[in-house]
Image (tube, rainbow, N blue to C red; front, side):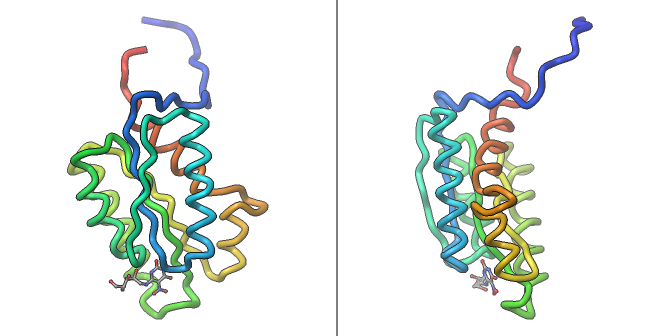
Length: 153
Ligand code: INI
């Protein structure tokens, strides 16, 4: 047993990992920024692959992630659901989140939730390369960290 307090927040190492990014085209101006962030993270962590796939909207992300889970070791799901845009915000955002979690637990392949769910466009812009960083970048780092989770230290 180690009595050492571990070091946290180290940048994960993606060498040797095949990573897929699946991005929704809906609210494309935002999701392209999230994609830029995710690709930056995968370059920084030296992922073996950073293959990009696109789907129409956030609602389609879970099925795409499930299909990709058979040949990738980590998946980054990117999308943007804006409440003001649709009366079915709760269905699209909720089912997307629930579906992605389900895929991750069923397959054991980490699926990072890089889907913005905001009240308006401005809140989305702030989180897609603005004052609050880039949630696509953060999601990609999370996918790598979870792919590595539990590996022998
Ligand atoms: N899809 C999104 O990704 N974001 C949204 O804000 C959105 N709105 O507003 O409706 C949206 N709808 C499309 C949805 O994801 C599906 O593509 C569509 O319902 C077909 O299944």
